Length: 398
Image 1 (cartoon, helix red, strand yellow):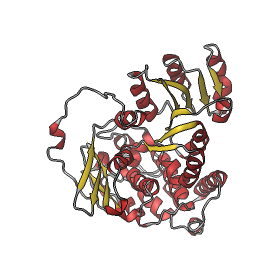
Image 2 (cartoon, helix red, strand yellow; image 1 turned 90 degrees about the vertical axis):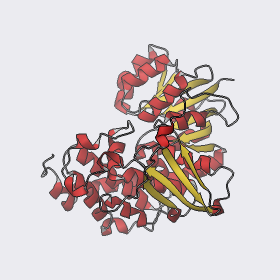
Image 3 (cartoon, one colour; image 1 turned 135 degrees about the horizontal axis):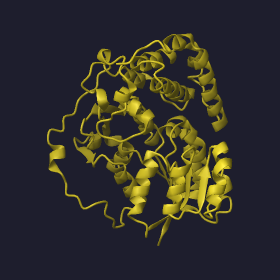
Image 4 (tube, one colour; image 1 turned 90 degrees about the horizontal axis):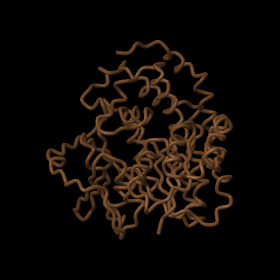
């Protein structure tokens, strides 16, 4: 039986990895819908290759400017999910939400009612809107599968385990491109060097987050929410090879680890196929050398000061939304060379302590519109922020 698939954010790195998996399994899966924001030519080529008849383009201007291109190929093009799927008679087998940034939360919530299974690879959606996602999952009886390699690994390791027996869960971090550098030595480092991740091919924003360790902090927050565990049960260890993705230490004395090659295709294909189904990812033999000299390291706050953020509480308040939005803006400013590398760390920690923001840390958004409003409020504040404006365009890059 051919299973139907929806991919939100098909033109991003996770979307492309999903298409690689489906390219080798065309007889088992059929793509029902693809979506993008800006990459029109790419999604057009994807739709032609996989014979996809429905496309969603979220950018309103590009939707209007390019819809005729798709109509000529008898591809229906829409501006939102509900419009595209309102006449759907049954749920699709699997939907993947891979839209980057907090903008992915709305489409993620929309797609749930149309899906039997939902795989999410969008940190911001889970961090900022998990309680709303949970509510929709329960309401629509949709199964949730975490697609990030770390969370997929934790989920696999905890299957059939008693959560009360968990002593510690470790998420592994590569250490990024500056693992062997002192922070003071790279405070003016050019963004082009920060983008050179040693193991993974990723987008620009997530590559900078990996360098600062913010990406791993986000993953800890995600894990806390997904598995409904105290954040103190989680820790981060640096594993430069990125071969082991999660470690669970049980009170029974047992330690379980999950390893796989540095490709997102593995958690994706293992999520698309049911546990008892037969499938082959590839025929490559196990490379023992990947486990020689595993070399786990403890990250320190001197070189990764953002790790101090894990001392905050993450209870589905406005704090998470403010954190994500400030970080997004600082990373964009760094990529534009408007601030230097060390300013990401210094300003993020400093801005989070501002009374303008702290007054919201005990309040929770009641709906997605309140999340959007907070994002807008944070952005407006940052435009007028004196500490931030003093840093802009005053730094040289090495």
